[in-house]
Length: 388
Image (cartoon, rainbow, N blue to C red; front, side, top):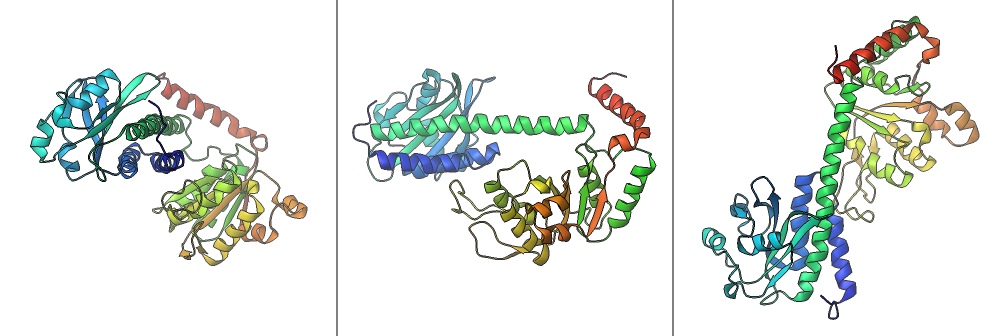
């Protein structure tokens, strides 16, 4: 199908805005609702629906819909090949029906059961790498009698993004579940294991510090258990029933970490289609663990310092002060004193974090704990492989 009569600038503006909305959430249910909202807004129509294919029953079911009868149709199912939607899914071909009354494929049962009057339909299959996932259908344009060929081209472009969004959310959900299971397997939710004097001294100090709302800086080599110790401090504090939120400062690019920490307002930057709370707001009342804080850039360090000193911050793109009550525990394997001397870490932030300092001993300093750790991991991995 040619695009001779399309306003290219408008076409790509609509497509870009819709793609931002479609890809603004990792949660599949939220993403699917936004998908149909995006399609409805882009197509200027009375209603739109996303139907997904249940491969076991070979039925299409309404997963998300907009319009006056959106709630009524969400429980309905359509057989593969039945009606216009079923025909599109079965044949994997887009379809433009200017007047549904003259098309024998139109199934009137849904209109009769809901009271909706369908005049014109465009529908396109949702496919990903040769796999049919479902279809998107759009009903009744607001500003004209029937849809045009250009409308169908736009819908086909949108459905290609819909397929990517569905697979993307599915993959994220599976990865998140695998991450949860992996944490269970390797025992990351367990307390620090060891009986050496060096470790016992650290745990006693942490126990004394925990009840007081002081900022804590935990230092030590990689793998010594800095996050586990931070969790212990939180669990033994009066904040234990409130959120404990960790963030790895080295895992995010500098241009994203400010938004991740402080949140952003809608339109603050490209892709910010909705306002979003940051980690400071989410952790309010509880503990925010800033891991690898030595990797944080100077500009973000300044904003962290202000939030620590005043308990107030602003979202990216916002001008409303937000008050939070957060305890900060920070960790690093770097020499922050040396970084202060070199000018790569703020001196005022260093001393603000250094209210209480705990140095975790490396394993070579507590060799007596090695047998305990070996036994622990043997049990963990034996359990995961169902071995005794």
